[in-house]
Length: 267
Ligand SMILES: [Mg+2]
Image (cartoon, rainbow, N blue to C red; front, side):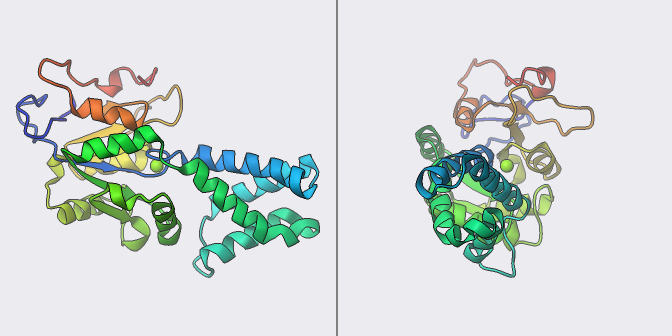
């Protein structure tokens, strides 16, 4: 059963559980819908390419889909600046006839991308509320420049007591040392922390290996299934905003669900 407890509370679910003082979040597809947002930005851009530049509809769709595929495969190339790398990806995707549009398309894509990746009002409220009682950390895997661009453009600094980007460090999730680094920086013990994330193999596995007080999984599919051998999260929730109610269950509240018992419906 999950060892999640409330700060300064005597209502922890197990007698030995340390009070939770710290919530560590993953970024992509946990606090922001990176995959969905990037797809929506490209869909919108595809429409605009046709409407504003006269690119045939089928080609527009092919161009933006092609760009997104290459971008996801390699979001950052250390040999180039972020801008230069993405402009070169757009040039290739646009092909000879339209590569002259590369800079304009890149700039519009960047605007659309951050429009669709913005934190929702509910997520902002949850983070602000949570921070009244807990320390909040962000641990994100990925290249330094690409991840810090998201952090800056989405103004995420203001919500967190600590932000760790794996590209700046010798380790990435699930390596327990990145969680230990977070604990050291925040001056807390692993048992006081919970990790919230969408990836079993990094967020949940890493949280377990680091000996955190609990792990919370936010599956990205409607009907997630835990397979034999998968790391077992303590709790499964649908949206990051549900974390506040999980942590703030009052005295007499039902015990936290064991996600392994109802993995098939993902509730
Ligand atoms: Mg993620």
